[in-house]
Length: 132
Image (cartoon, rainbow, N blue to C red; front, side, top):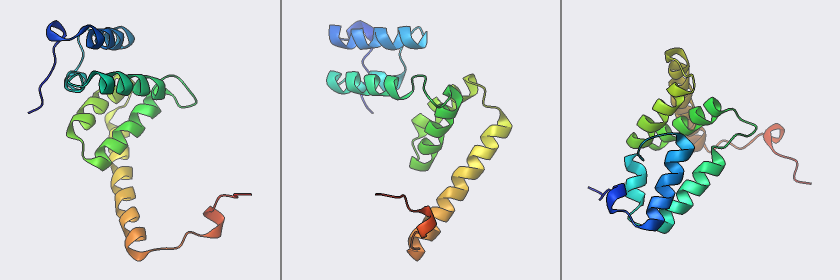
């Protein structure tokens, strides 16, 4: 199992990232994902800064961003990310009906993606982007 770096044993560089995560998220402690990344402080900092930027307010609302993150996590089979982003999506308003529809879409997309790939279906002109 991966070593987890707790705040008390963290370097000043790691503590600075932990402090930013806790302040940004309004939580008393960082989760195990961040504690695992702390074994390599540059990766911890880069990942946090990237995630913070991607999940920041933008054209997509926070719930939509969490639903997308959850869908990709399901498609990739990341048990930790599924648990984390299910909790985040629920906190942002996802209900059981929405979760059921999300699962149906993820399952359907996986099936049709595999069929299109296996059949090597050519992309219709109507779906191609104008590259001029």
